[in-house]
Length: 341
Image (cartoon, rainbow, N blue to C red; front, top):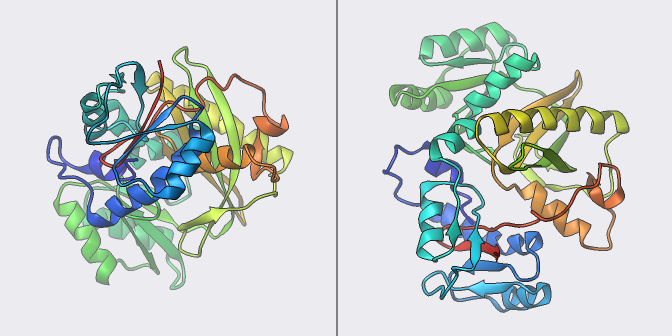
């Protein structure tokens, strides 16, 4: 599990030192959830010691646990990480598995929020007032123009970030204090930042898709993502399917995004986030060209007896498609997945 995927993408080439302790712990905590993406015969690459709960869950699902340090012969399995990075490629190669990575430059380009923002502009769905900025002057101008009221909220984001990391929040027409210091450091390092007026969320959606090597885009499902007042994900709500109209809007946007990802050279699993607010639907909030927690939660629930947390193939609300790619594999220095080859 390389939940530090975006952190590695953001680092200069060849200079990523590995995940900080907080992300390392998160890698290990979240890795067992990958079992819900696995099929019998797959394997999870996970550093020992293996918790008893993980041993039991893997056995129940028919998934083999493989030691990260001594993986044995994995030449008959294909390796696919949570997200493709140079570090993930090394893990797969060291395990001796078949590794067919997406080029790092492609992965970095399509996961950048700058690429997503450019696509929003092209499709005509960008937030009014949203802008990119290379200088503090540009940032201050964007803030004052889009948020003139003292209580107008806004967010400034780095091009790579996840789970509400690598961003600052503020309100009012002035960029000052701690948010300004954060921006100054990144602008000085040569970063282009993204400014957006804050939208008060009514509901947030996660759409997962599979881009086949043929270019076909298959929609996995639409999940009901729950966030707090700061936009940080807190879980997924079960049993509240979106309206038919919303499903149509979200899946159409996902198919457009999937086709653009394919045109850029990306294939595999991807996701997009969308946001419903008082003014309507913002259909493209973020693109994640990797596996997503929305997919793991959707698959977990689809394999249980509970009501589905989303619309998807399980309840026939989306077109059926083969589940041959239900899981490839996962990685980093604490976990990975292999699938039978």
